Image (cartoon, rainbow, N blue to C red; front, side, top):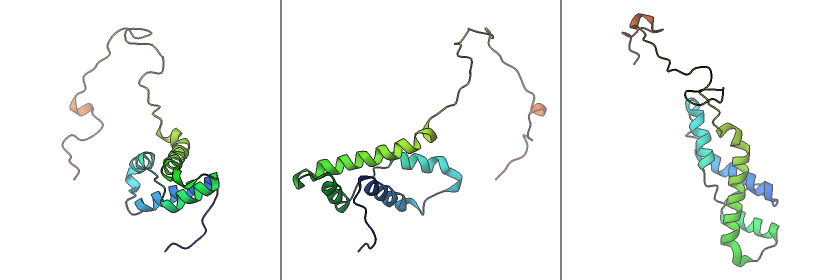
Length: 130
């Protein structure tokens, strides 16, 4: 049996759904893989339980025969809420060339290449880390 305060507002119910989903993973968080954690949060289903769906139904003043539709609606609301907050973290802003020119255009119209000797590398090629 769960004890505690349960919210009856839409935002409160969404926070509760997200908090419960994150609680499932608290033992699996790897500080060395923060990106993986945020990817899991982004991909999570955030499925509301029946009690949360019922509170959402009451909040929305909807009939009981629409519970499955309301559960999907609430799930989408929770997912959209998380995506809105994580969107900047999940965007890829890596660019190889900031000039906006395509291949063969702009300042460099030729292919750049070079050869590096082993002694020019900034590490010891004979050293192995286990």
